[in-house]
Image (tube, rainbow, N blue to C red; front, side, top):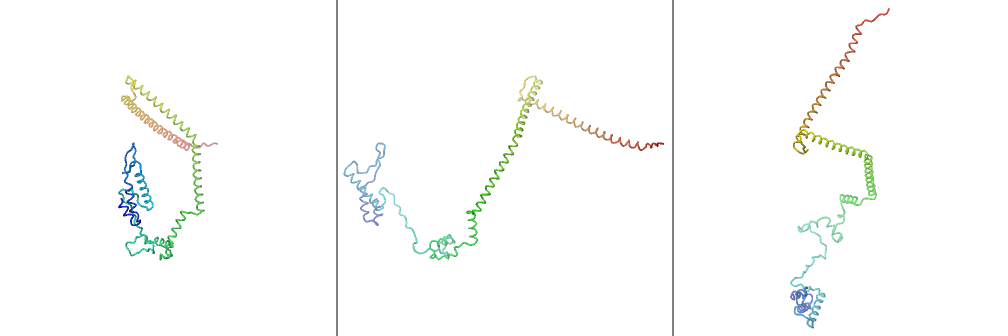
Length: 293
């Protein structure tokens, strides 16, 4: 540690090596020992109280004051090395101008924006013609369009606000009209709901009566009570449904035949009624007129 501090500070401060050696001798490396459940810092070679301890503490205080005064690294670094930052490569004299012929010149330094930066930093000393820094008509039009979009005029802002208020009022009006139309239909909707409810109850009642009737018929056929979920009952219901469909089909056929027969009779009656006036006219032509003397 002493050799490191001596090497780091010998070039700047002549007194640094002697102070560093004094601090290294006076302040030995600390060590940790547990005491009553806590870690207590003990200095090697200094135990108890007395002139030896006081001298060690005074030497350590003097060494730390020298560290703070000369900006030296602290002595508790152990084996760590201090960081020495390299010097900044600043070009404090002259103006830097990129060389287009140099292949190592970055591409962004050859763009027009870099010339604007050079002229803004160095002025006329940069050698940049300020006439070339003005935007072209296309760039100016683009900038104006962007400005109009980001910063509209007062009239445009008022027009946009009026349009927004009009749209909000129109939406509110349509909402109120929709609510009014629905409220006007509310009585009819309630009546329809009540009717559907009554129809559903009636249908359930009819279905229940039909099931009771089928159970009674099955009891008469089989001679014992059956469950409506049993296979025998399901087969009987299918047979009855089949017979009922056949009966409905027969009734429909009879009604169709009756309708056809009725139409035939109506056509015959109409034809007979049309033929009677024609016969009456023929008889009148054949009868001679009666002469009155």
